[in-house]
Length: 280
Image (cartoon, rainbow, N blue to C red; front, side, top):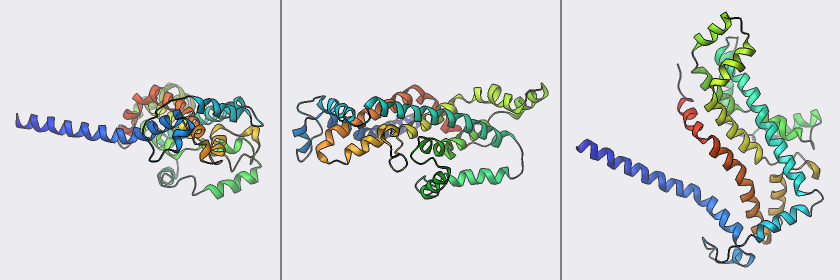
């Protein structure tokens, strides 16, 4: 009985801590939504309130008006964001899956060294290698081109690590049986291994979608017809505090697609994270 009571008390404390942590994590989203619904005069009240007295959708209509009054219509920015996001997400899933399969199930010289390099690369953010990336892209002639946003984002060390750890859990006997039946590596990868990696693949889709949808390309793409929504919204926000409402409305708009994707695939994330550090 004592042990049961202690377990219940521990569960209650854990639940309370998770609720408090969840509230802190949800607070920025809540404030963004409230700010997007505040009329202009309420945005300058000090100290700021955590609610709005007269909620309005004027900030959203103003945001669309501002974007439509640019040299390029809003639909073009939206199309650019969708095209870049879809291309990066699809390409990353294809190339990362094939690379993870080779690293996890194929034996070749320097494979351990390559794995160590991948793990080490997780320590570095893209800002660290930005100058080198820019120099390479300049030599390739893809600056001021959508390829400048797409090509560097296809390679994902985190996605490669997660997929490799997940594929490593698959028994080698299944792959050996497929080889005996005459299947090649490409067929084994796409018809046997990858269909059994749904949790890891869904997690990779979440990471790739979120990163590409929120990608800032202001220093790589300068022509207006190639810019994406995050870049244009950043330009709007730099015009001053008078556009704070429109900026918050744009932030809410940009928040919707990643939330939808996460809600559709979040059940797969926990399973992947639980197995990402397990070795056979």
